Picture 1 (cartoon, rainbow, N blue to C red):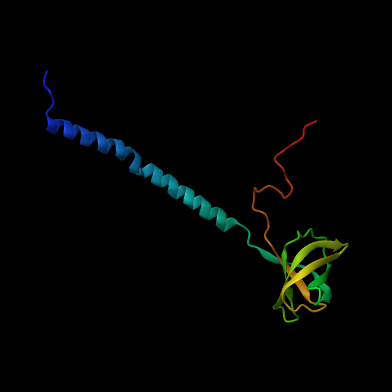
Picture 2: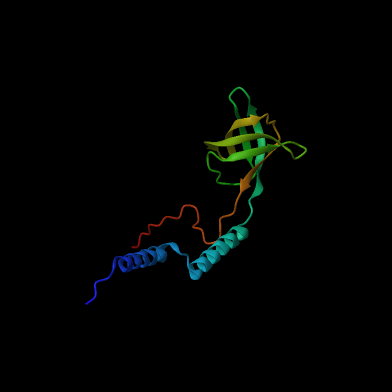
Length: 148
C-alpha cells in the first residue's frame, strides 16, 4: 500500500475545501430564476394595488382657535378612527389646514385638533382613503373563530 505524499494530501485538502464551500456560496441558475419570478410577482402586486383617493368627510361647523379644535359636521356615516389626518380645503379647492380626528364625537359631529393652518366655518374636509388590498382581511376580522 502506498502512502500519499504531502503534495497529494495538500491537493486533496484543497479540492475538498473548494467543493465544501462551493456548494453554499454559488448561486445556481434555478435559484436566480426563482428570485426573478418572486421579484416580478411583488412588482405586479404593487402595481395592482388600488391607489388612494380623497373622499369628502363633511364641512367645518365650528372653529375654536383658543382651544385649537374644530367641529366637523359629517355628511356621511363614516367610521373615522381617532388620529386620522383630515385636510381642510378652501373655496378654491386648495388645502388650507390639516386637522387630526379626536375620539370625541356626537351624532354626525366629529371633533378634530388643528395641526396647522387656519380652518374657517363652511370649508370642506377631505380624507385619504386607500381601499383594502384584494385578499386582505377585513378590518375587525380576527383569527379566532368560535364554533358552537
